[in-house]
Length: 226
Image: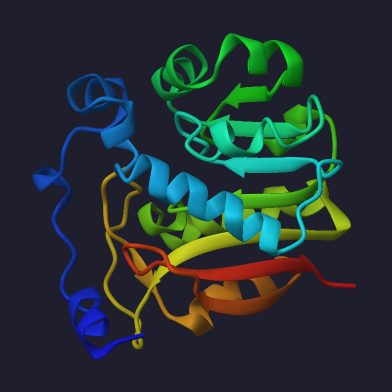
């Protein structure tokens, strides 16, 4: 991590009141691609290439946490076997935009992605275990309690040999984050914090670090502890 990035990430995060609106109002104002941060093609392809490099197979069941308008989905759904893509997103407007504007009717019909709207990480609603899970730029918008809730509720839904990949903004010293989650908020954590979140909920944490993210988010992998 470069000194310039550390200097930026150690800055005081913006106040929630200065951020664009979240929820349906924000999606309507910004559009679904901008709402999830833009760089639609670049970050969608980056995630797909990363998962392939980590050994993703068509037979794997993949859970895309905070899947948005299917930025990763449009890349990975055609690759996976039917019904092997699970997406959970709290904003119904994003799911609707992804299904109607980003995913072709042919792919929807052939691959039958399983999508659920929800904000409480109730992954058990899918009724199946997953081999791989991905949360790209989710923990960058969440306080610690929400990160721990996500990890706790995912653990019983992850296969014993499964892996959960999550990105975050890294700082060298713990910083003062906002107290409430916000889709456009800025939250950053140390490597030790991210590892500790996982270890507290039955995971072995593996720091991956840089993975060519255009905004310098780093990656951590969580595997179920024996």
